[in-house]
Image (cartoon, rainbow, N blue to C red; front, side, top):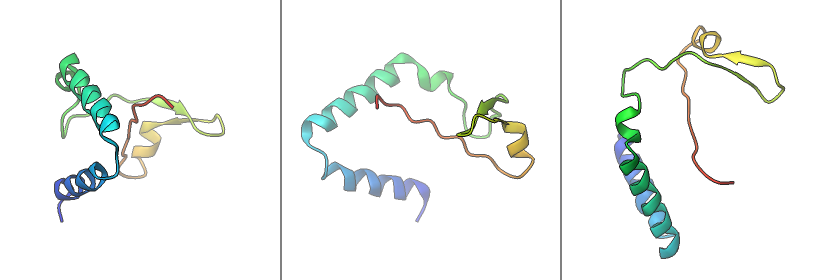
Length: 82
């Protein structure tokens, strides 16, 4: 199963578990993000992201270049208000 197929299956499964009002809020949020132009300003597949350094859970600085020297790096961003 491809990643796209897995994501579609996850989306379909979650649709049945979420109340209509929460799905509506999520749909509005996605529409607002699309309208903001964020997609056009985002990096695309294969484009290089800028280097960065951030503190880890212990406060030690970790740089993307150090992590990349050990292998591929995946960065995930979570948007939310929690």
